[in-house]
Each structure stands twice: as structure tokens, then as C-alpha cells.
Image (cartoon, rainbow, N blue to C red; front, side, top):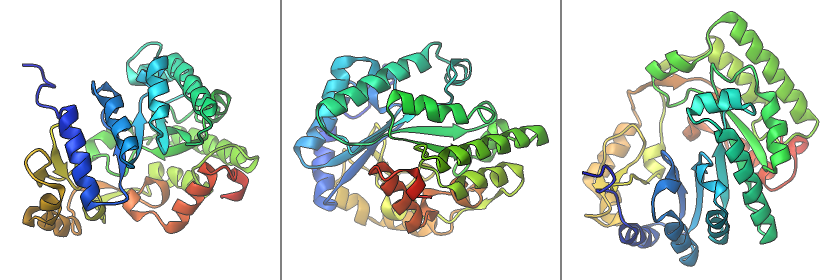
Amino acid sequence: MDKYSDEMSLADWTTAIVDLKKLINPLAIDFTGGEPTIHPDFLEIVEFCRAHGVDWFMTTNGSALTRHRFVQHLVASRPIKIDISVDSASDDIHDVVRGVPGSLGRIEHGLRMLVSERNKTRLDFPVRIKVTVHRMNAGRLAPIVEWARRAGATAVDFNPVGGLWRKEQMERLAIREPRDIEILQEEVQKLIEQKSRGAPIETSTASLLSMIEHFSGGLTYGAAPCRDPVRNFIVNPRGDVRGCGCSSAFGNVRKQTAKQIWAGEVAKAARIKSLGCSLQVAVSSGKSSCMARKSIGDDIRRAMLLMGFGARRVQ
């Protein structure tokens, strides 16, 4: 049987979106994955969002941005932002990490096409480059900023592997050797210097510096305070609803209304349980922590940069 045969159809998604808007208005939907653009009706889904006054944004690996008509329809559906995951400005790193030869070149082509189409239609949504810092790319972070600037991206955000990555993943990807830590420290200083000169680096100076602590031993494993289930309504391709990526499903949008799910006893119990989450996750300060722990200052600095105020004014 086709492994995608049980995924939600276009009709399922549109019904769920209408129902969600009854529960939450205004509503913003984050399409992520995996890779959201592989859904055969993705463009129809985001166009439905636009037509019904639902804000939407996405995180993508950029693989679909090489198709001009796809990009045209994507921009016409008016996203509030698009994040593109990139591991390196060098294909000998990015393509190896992704396991897809030629992928970086295609991403750059697609990014330029996306920015051109956005500018042509006089829209101003940000296009961000999201970089997860790990053992394979930590020595070549600074060139990503110039690569992103040349390609027309709005900003670059660096995030160390950690947060809700599990312990076994951290052991494989984390930077632990003293010389590797020194190399990372050198790269972080380069990023801070670039940022001071006005480079479009969204990550705060404090968060950049915290990456060194994150990898050099300031990281602990334990119960991380989590408020995601209090504010999140995560729907997977089969309609199952969770409050965070680590919890069990507490409903399904194909079988229940959003209100029934959110107000149900199972969801209530999940929200209470999350306050004492026992998952062994990576916990440290700054950029390596869960988004649930970000301060209002972090959010304001991010917003100012994406609105075009520049890195000098948002440190």
C-alpha cells in the first residue's frame, strides 16, 4: 500500500482549517515537516489559507523552489515568511549533509527566483536562511552570511543542534573535541564582527556566544520546562493532533472538531503533564533552549531585523 495513502486530502485540510479558525482567530499556520511542499495539494492548501484570511508560513529545504510556476503560486498565496534550511555555503558540506548532490546550487537558484518574484509583486515577506550548527559545518559558518546576502535572503539565523534533539542525536552531531570548540569559537567571533558591521544576522550576540557554552560543557540533560502544549495545535499528515513533537496524540481533526479536541479531557491532561515533562532533552541558556523559554526581548529583536531595521540596531 502507498505509504502516503492515509494522509489528509485537500478536502480534509480545508475542513480542518475552517474549523480551526472558529477556535482561533486570527489564526497562523506553520507548515513544516519533513518537507511540506511534497504534499500534492500544498499550493491549493496555502491558497485556501490566503482566500480565508489565515496567515501562513513555512520551513522548507528549498527543493520545490526551482519550479517557476510553483514559486509564482507560492508568492501569490502571500506567506508571512519563508524559512529555508541550509547547512553550508559550500556544496561539499551542504550536499553531503543532505545526501543530495547538487542541492545547494538548486537552493540558490530557487532562492533568487523566490526573491525576484516577491519583489516583482511588491510584497515584503522575509525569506530567512535557517542554519543548524553541528559537527560537520561549525568551521564554516561565516561564509553562509555572504552567500545568503548575495542570493537576496532577508536574514540568517544560527541555531545549534540541541534544544529538543534527543541525547542520542546530540552525541552524534554535537561538537565535543577541544580543537573543534576552538574552531567554533573563531567562527562565532567572525559572525559577531559581521553582525557589528550590519550583516543580516538575526541571531543575537548573546545567543551566538551561548553556542560555545552549549557545546563546551555548559549543556545538561534533564527535564526542560515546556509550554508548547499550552499554545500549540500540531496536526500531522494523518490528522493526529499533538501539543508538541514529543507527546502522544490527543485527537484527530478528521474525527473531531478543533474545539472538541482542545477542550477534551485528553488534551487537558497532556497540557498539565507537559508542565513536568520528563523527556531527557538538552537544556542550556540562550539559543540552545526551547522556543517556549524565549524572552519578549528576543522576539522584539527578531521582529525588528525582519522589518528591515538592520543588525546594528537589534543587538
